[in-house]
Image (cartoon, rainbow, N blue to C red; front, side):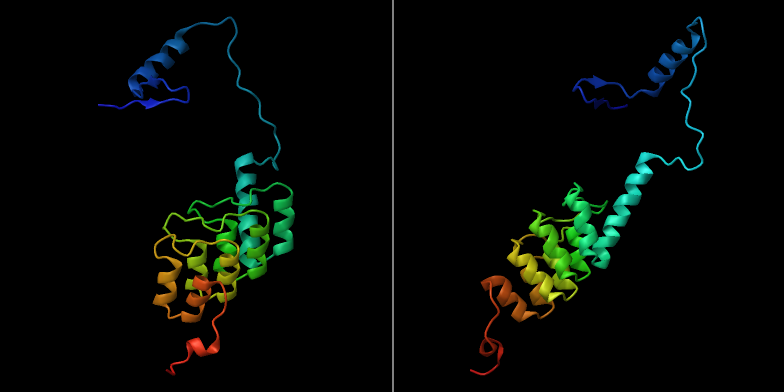
Length: 187
């Protein structure tokens, strides 16, 4: 039994391959005064399809975030590239910059309105990735930029505890660095 899918207009049409084949056969049997021609494509060896150009641009943008090329990335964002564009795993430009420890590159998209609370397809938040990689400064920038330490699995708090990053946990929780006395083992 084949199920039908709604089309963009909301009505349901059969996905039955036989019905499609019969319709194509009927259309082929009709006679026209002139044979149908296929649209010509430009004969250009350098012609590249738009999807390939889009993929190349996205790859370039994620490489800029990965390498911390803040000024180049800012140029693209200022020109209209979506600040929260994501890859196939749900990672944004901000996610990639944070994971690779680029605090200035993280600050720039945040200042342009990037969402610091994006959760990728694995359930990880941007701040959790920074903590996991040991990028304390980036985690602080994200927290000051509005990152939710209770979102995702594991949460930022869980991640700090897993990796024994107690001073960072205190900063994330209270919004300031703890005094040195708070971290000592003295009573």
